[in-house]
Image (cartoon, rainbow over all chains, first blue to last red; front, side):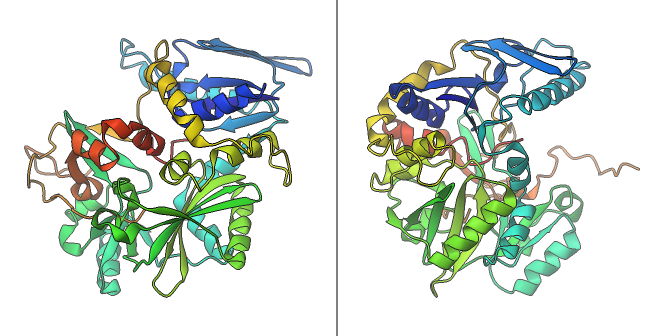
Length: 384
Length: 52
């Protein structure tokens, strides 16, 4: 089988899956989006009724389709060189992005896509997720998404209880060896900036939920793999389990059948075949949907608890092209048998490629060393 | 009309920056297993989402 993976060169998930599949005789091509346009060339030609495309670059030599599966793992924007005239960059960037977006829609149109591009783009929007989750019958937190300072302040007042703020995208700020990580955070009216600043960045505001524990639900077609995260056992992970992985206990779990049915309905309505969903389980046992990550990270779960098998099922999901009851070629595959090799490859995989610019990182020369700006250090984690 | 603001030495920060957890790269590594357990951190970062 021929598989195409879109990602960046040192993506451990992609490297590990490629190792497994190549060992079993499948052809895997990885396409590093950041190499375009400086190290990659691509052309599309239309003639009569024919359409032809060709792409080449480091570890990439493609013409026409012929792929059975496309794993659109990570979208990496075209990366322009520093030496380019700043006045020309906006146009070049826009032209590159439009060209590449069109090209991807011509690549392997008949393949099994994880995920289909249109579904992925729509499902990445949190407001759409929440609306579709409501429609699928899932419980969602009371939510305000807004940049209206008056409405935000009123909402926080109406809750009369601790509230949280979430961004639409992850973000962190770097200043030398200092870093400011944005997770889900507790928020109160006193912590809001002035209205003319608050309105510049829409945000998501919800009541802080009481939690018994949390669930990470990985959906691969019809298959649902659920892990229970004991997020309340550590002070650092009570609000957001992403804040700390050391000491975080993860156990296999299962969704109630009626919730699983609703999860499938949500995936269908969003046009996704793969996704990682986050749920809170309240002390009363209610499952509250937080979000679905259309191409969420998943190997960390098996890394934390090898009983929660994900690498093998994911490889079989690709090889089965989403068909229920497909191949079990990778049933015996374990993350532990591939992790070290994949990480070893990852250490040098970026050599010879364009350096990937992390879209969620910002330089922050004014990061306060202590106190300052009212940011403070929050000892507790956050709810994702 | 583009709104203006009195000039300040340090421009005010947005809510996300005000609430961000401040730490060091070393502390962050330690929270995710330290250098010896780097794969754990690598498996969870880059984060769940990317930009389409």
